[in-house]
Length: 442
Image (tube, rainbow, N blue to C red; front, side, top):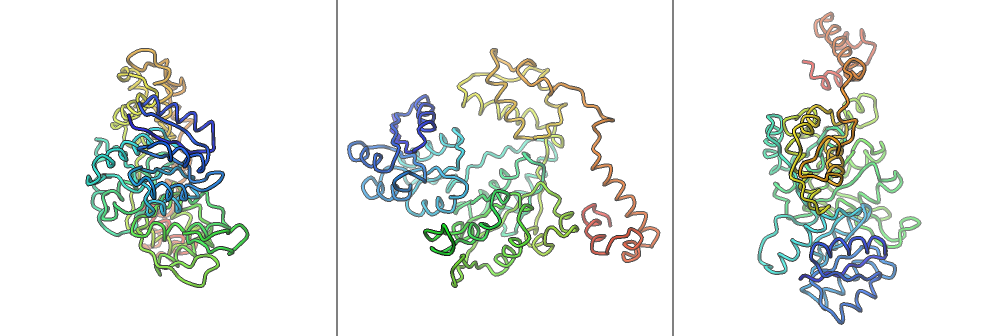
């Protein structure tokens, strides 16, 4: 039985995770500070130490280095918040096996522990997943899914920047992780950055780093995302949320492949591949002056569209069964599948929240299910409500259709003279070109 030392000052979280790991067959002890953890390590040997990066007395990096000095065979996995990912990446260079982001997903922790134990038993065996990259991309069988997967296969080995568009919850980060895992950079860090969660006044520090004393609160040097991920991939999620000022700084960094940490007069080179994602219409944002056109083209050497579940209804049973297997494992259930009525409801439902919504629905249904198969009573009633086609028609889509018709009419009347067509439409020529590109008007 593998022994795990869990180190976290959040006693409630510690108890919950300790109980869950114990049910999975591990011998687990806990400690609420670096000091108490080191005391336990003096008298006992642990296969794995699972520690928070931020502890009340010392940080996880200190604990990591202390462990590696005296217990080189003990694997260390760090738990970290989004804002500390660059530090966590540095921890791998200091000997950590891997890191996971908070809020912690139990299945992800379990997978990391299993990988760590496997490598501990066979140090020469190559790991398929390294430096925090856990790929659980489900391909699907529909023609649309096959086409998307083929595009991923083609672009992954290149150095092209990739822009992934698609609705919220459609799996854009899974696509980015798959691209990284199929690239020549798969052994290097994959650093995911939520652009919408970074305050404007801290964006430069998060992206490019800072030196001690650069501003109030800068109590030590900080390595930014781009340098921390050097050699690997930076995934910029919700790129459309960046302020215009940060867009300028980002463009300059990407063009020069150098960054200047806040408060420093020295430039630092970096080598990363950029993958971006957005659920916004960036062409429209460019046309409205909210997103720099030059940055858009810099990020969009190759574009991919994450498919909504409405666009791949053939794949709905594939995803449903995948989430059922994950829910069975997490909830320690043995539900076999879905009855025919539930699968029919799933296929007819529009899934506005896409994969994220389906995962939650299936997990809840797995918990409620008291038989071998999930039935209609186990799923939310609203999933089975009929779609009111006339009332719920997509007004945004209708507006776009009208706009396309007007542009085509203006171009026809002016014999494709863009300047005259723009004048008729009462817009400038640049906006017309952007709209033509947006709607694929030749």
